[in-house]
Length: 131
Image 1 (tube, rainbow, N blue to C red):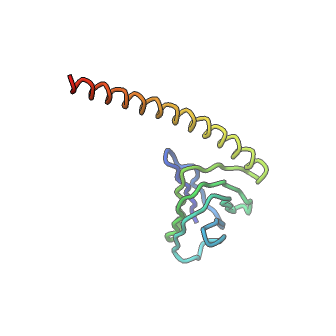
Image 2: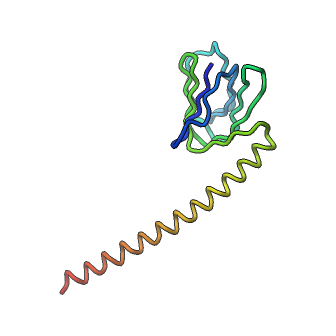
Image 3: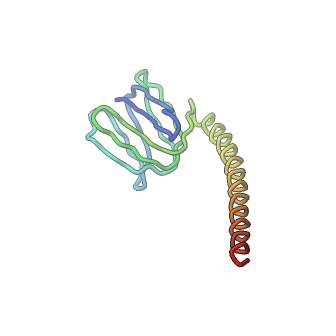
């Protein structure tokens, strides 16, 4: 099977795999090459896969969607982090979420400034219309 993990800005992973294990709202599931076509809404958690050498690898994924169609397994998610083992993955997730949190705070501050500017201009326009 080919596992392809899609993020909004790039393809995180495209690799031949022997097995994929993920978590949906109703629990974990495992996909093997002969599995029927399948779709699932993923919940935030760990997606693991076994490469063709038998090595288990891990991805921390945000909520998203998984579609298995023939030999292709597509995963689409907003955020994902890859790690060779669970301990390394935990550290990578913490780093990424700290970075995301900083970006989110900056974006919120920028949005507040934009909204305040819009309100000021709107009030100026309202005052101008009264004159």
